[in-house]
Image (cartoon, rainbow, N blue to C red):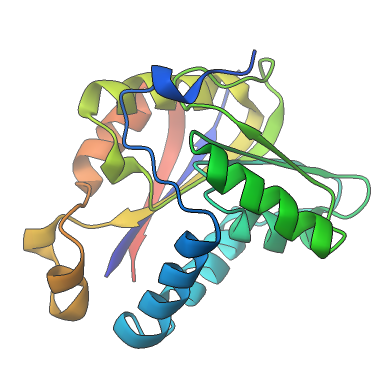
Length: 210
């Protein structure tokens, strides 16, 4: 159903949501409710499995700095915070203000110190070489090709030398089967993403399917 890409980077301002050319999802708690319904009745737990496998692919170590780009309501970012521990840091950005408000509320309720802010992939509000791990989960298919290039260049900028980028996304509809093909029209070409990632300067590409 999904394609995974794991990449290792060998080298080395808060943006307004309305500046992005990508699709903005919002809804806050309604988004979470829809996600629960889809995972329970459409994907039969595969979305939860996707988050777990995505986190495991990153091989997060205690003390590392982690960024979730397009974090939505913060589910993955909150889940991986326990892996970095008190010495580490987890941040999440999303162009949807309601998504970020929901993410902050969830983190506060669970007493999890994750930093959430409104931001866009084409202008990441972080210094160069800030993160050991960057996630992008079910987000790339919402971006036009030019924005994928710009966003992945920004991700490469904020990755530390030796850092890891983990991308998980739907395959293109014509490459999918079963419920996923009927439910979701969007998708990404693994070959196209791999080429754009390489252009951005991220190296040592690995891919796998779920």
